[in-house]
Every structure is written in structure tokens, then in C-alpha cells.
Length: 592
Image (cartoon, rainbow, N blue to C red; front, side, top):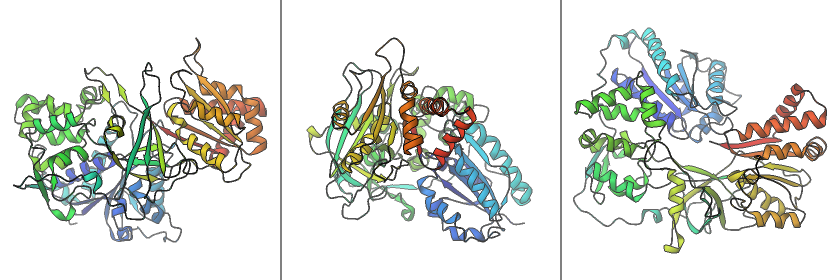
């Protein structure tokens, strides 16, 4: 049997599945295989019937949803009209990337596996279900899964097994080569170069929204800086409903850009073009300055993945640095890498500074292979167009925390947003809107119960503004925070709604008394009201906020309400909960 052409298709939301797909591709190239790597929606799915060997690498997002770059593929694959044996020529393997702290763990990979079997595909090995929650992260599953995959492939194609692969320390050719231009011209304001005349704003065509205000809404004595940020979207085609999210890509900090350019001995003002220009990254202008590339494209502030160390090790000539990098790249060195990188949340930039000899050896052509692209961040929209026409508002907790490293860790996007000051002149943020997972009832009389502690209240502010404008007054909100005087977001608005008879509010201020009180305690205390609304008035129940313990604790409290007020057994309460979830009367939007 001749050598196969390996097609690797991925669905990736945060870049991890893409990174894994590219890692498999590098392994294939080292075995002299012809390989193609594509996001699922960039692949013509009709060609799948004639493919012989495909690896699918799929993440699961939100509440069991496929990533944005595989949604069209997903719709096509689940068409009822597809004939049962249509993929009988196909040998394939499926690797799922998930997080077991979410209820629908690796749902996309499991569902894809089932569907491909229905369509007659031959599955080479059991589905890999990688878990972010594992001590060693996703690699704890990916490494043994890849070993099994190559064993299966060698058995299927002995000609591949007979080939002597390239050594791990041999460099593969770069994806692009840089061509620097002699002239250094003043770069135009790229943030304003975004076209505003198209009808639909999207990831590839964001709208440059003017920042109107950026206010801190927590007391200055409070440990957490939380911002209420407002954008002007006049002149855009952006539309959104309660529960929708806004997407944006952050920029790297000026001091990080400066340090990066110094470490790699790059002049930030110099301009370049890339070859081959056919597959030029869509978000980079041609020609582009080094400053633009580092500020807006290369993710240098992220915690690097193992693949970064694999590629970095191939440049190392210093023996000590090379040994350490090879160890970090190996299966056996993953615990060591975890404690060096993941636990203290060490950034790529800090790693480069820790390996100065190797960093000095880096070839500029490999920049786009070494550093992933900055990924978009999503925020629940905290306002309604019915209350604030031509405006879009968000509530952002500025991420800052300590690890064993001297420098505090900072969230890239929240820190960047917090640094933007409209008083210093016009500030524009390219953004687009995406449908969220929360859907609110259209019927006027259906009551809505919302549990949103902390910044989890953002989508519910949007919902309440929308519902009050539409004359829907059966609204119950459970809000929790640390202290009534320090982080009680939108207090005056809730009081106004309560005085008008549009809202019933329950609050839990966890640190204002000796015993901590959380939203789940208030849910239990309100059992009579909640049972009446859910059992007799067909109310919908929503939970939004941090995915640690809160969603599970609130869910358990609600099941207790069913048992206490409805006289149910624990099993019956579980069943009622499941029915509400299945019928869309119980919805959650959580983030980690």
C-alpha cells in the first residue's frame, strides 16, 4: 500500500485544538508524510466522501457547543439527508479536548464519533478525551493517544513504518519567510483602517467602536478592580439581544513589546512582507511593521504550550538550556514542565528571558510557528439596545493575582481594557457580536429567575433592561458579592426597578457577617416563591458566573427546593431538573 495523504481537521475556540493539530502535522512531516491541516469550516466537507485518512481534533465550548470554526461543518454533517454508508472509504481518528468541570465534557468529540460511525466511517482507535482538569493537562491523554494512533497507522500502511523519520532536533522548514523592506515608513493607524461599510461585522471584519467611558465600579479599598465599560456603536450594523456576547482581541502591553524586541534584537519600526503571500495571515497588513506584529498578533503573554518548548529546543546550542528544553518537551518531563510553567503561570516572554542563549539563536522566519495568534476574548453584553440605543456595555473584572513568581500575573485582555482612557483622546476597539447561549422567553407572562453573583450579573442586566422595556415585569434576581459597600454592582438600577414593581431582588453579601452567605443560601430560603413560580407559573431559571463551585451549589439548592416544596424524592428532583434543562427552562452560562 502506498503512503497515505493525512488530512488533519480541527475545531478550535481558544487555540489549543489548533496547536494539537499542528503538533500531529509536525509528527507526520517528520515521517515524510504528505499532510494538510485546516480548520473544519475552511474544508469543503463534500470532499469527505473521497478522503481515505483524516484526524479530527475538536474542542467543546460553552455548554457542549462546537467551536465557531466548525459550526458550518457541524450543520452539514448532521443533515438527515446524508446517506448511511457515504463515508465507507474513510479511516479516521477523533481526539477531543475538553474540561471535566463542565457538565457536557467533550460532548463534541463524542457526538462526532457517533455520527461518523452512522455514516459508515472506520474509526481507527477509541476517541481520545483529553481533560484540562488533569494534573498534567490535556497531554495526559494526548500523548498515549498519539502513540496508539501511529501504531494503528503503521499497521495499516507498513510503508510509513519502514521510513526513518527526521530526528526531533532537526528543524522543519518555517511556514513563512520574512522579507524586510529597506524603507521605514510611518505606520498608519491600523485600528482605524478597519472597514466600517460592510453590513455584517465579524471576526474578519470587526467594527472599530469608540470607547466612551471606562469606570471602576468597586470601592478603591476592594481587592478587585472591576470596570463598567461603554462603547459607541453608532454607524455599525451590530445588533444584539439579552444573553449575547461581544468579542474582541486584546493588544500586548508596551513594556512587553519593548522587551520582546530587545530579546530577539528586532527593530520594532522595520517593515516586512511574508512569503508565501498566498496564505498570508488575514489579520496582518501587507507590508507590516514588527511593532504591529508583536502588539496585535503574537501571543507573547500567554502561558506557552509544550509545542513551544519542542520548537525552541531545536534552536538551542547551549548544552544546559538544550537539556532543559528537551526535558520539557518529553513525555517524561511533563510534571517538571507543569511546575515550571503552568502552576506559576509563567509567560512565553518570561521563558524567553530564562533561556537567553537559545532566544538569541532564534530565526525570525519561525516567529509565526513559535508564537500562536492572540485569540479573541468574549464578554457578556451588560446592556440592552432598548435602554441604551447605539451603545454596548460590558462589566469586566481586571484579572490580577499572585503566584510564586515575583511579578503579579495579569489577564491580557482585562488589563489592556483597563488601561484604555478615553480622556486621553479617541480610543477605538475593534469588536463584533456573537449569539450567546442564554435565551429568554418571548411570552410576556413567563416569569424569569436569574442567579448572577459577581460579574455573572452582566447578562441579567441586559435581560432586565430588555424585559422592562417590553413590559415584562415578572423578574426575580439573586445577586451575590463580598460586601454591600464595596462590590454591589448596579445597586441604584436594581432599586429603581424594585420601586417600580419590575423586580424582586435577593442579595447575598458573603463577607458582611461572620457566617458566609452565598446566593445558594438565598435560593433555599426562597423555596416557597421559587416553587410557585417554577411549578405553577412555568418560570425559566438562569445561572451565570464563575464555573468553580457556584453553578453546582445553586443547582443543588434548587433540587432541594423541589424536594422540600414539591414533596419529591432526590431522584425525582434530579429528573425534574433534567427536564427543565432539556426544555430550555433552565439555562447556564459559566466561565472558568
